[in-house]
Length: 129
Image 1 (cartoon, helix red, strand yellow):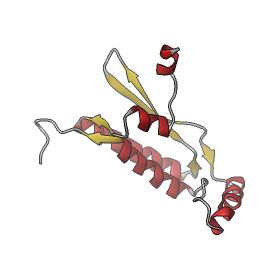
Image 2 (tube, helix red, strand yellow):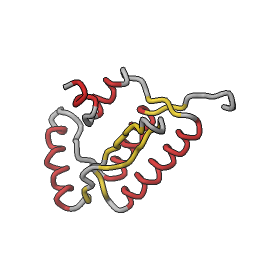
Image 3 (cartoon, helix red, strand yellow):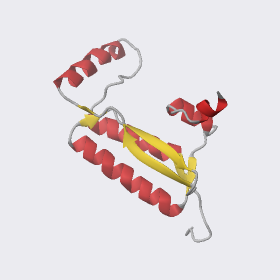
Image 4 (cartoon, rainbow, N blue to C red):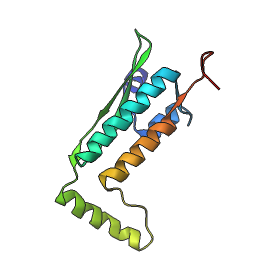
């Protein structure tokens, strides 16, 4: 049962629990490549009006490296999604939580900001200060 738990997929809250709320450390180069990849992919998805994507992080134990990709149910921000956003925004008007359905540029910003919080650069002896 413990092995099954170790192989399961974790959500944001699970990821933060797994890392004890600390960002995952990456080398300078890995962080730069990761950052540019996330920015480029999220920008592309925003331009074509896609949202509801997530990041999948795996560990290649043989090569001792992370394997990362953007995945999930990528959904076009169409008229149905816009109507869903309006419907879910109504409780906000009466003091409830922020809407869960947001426009693609805002989704992109929320996603890229989360990636900055979840991953950080670990300095090496070659890191400039």
